Image (tube, rainbow, N blue to C red; front, side, top):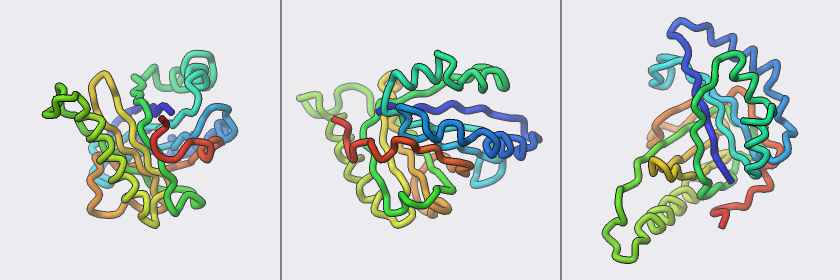
Length: 204
């Protein structure tokens, strides 16, 4: 499993209705895409839920890296983003865990992202497994979070270049107060053709 996201930041006065119309017209295109677990069409509006920017920021979980490559590099859809907005940087993470929540059967309306910088170096443990233990703790916490009745899907993934931990959660309604997320989004549409096929928990 791989996670990916690109962020298209738009001017402060941009009419975000244009993005909503774009997704309403074309969001269904990936509803049956081979190799795709999910694509969440995400939107942030300046001044809403603390967002400092207007931003279109789709988030993906891929089952198949070949399908991800075709989407990005083989004319599989990303060219439409490049045509209309230029070519954004695409962040990607190695999947560490994914869980279904009680609200999996309800279309999500909100999403939350938390990015955490992982400690540098081998850590205090002489066996070099401090990161493994940290991920075990984070996975246990994800299991607890995924029991919340409003959770659709919860995932963890790691950027092994900058060593950042991503936690991404889809919510059936609004993101509850008190969650330690970094960014909050509105979900305009969810394509989830192969989400049910992802193994629960860690993929190894």
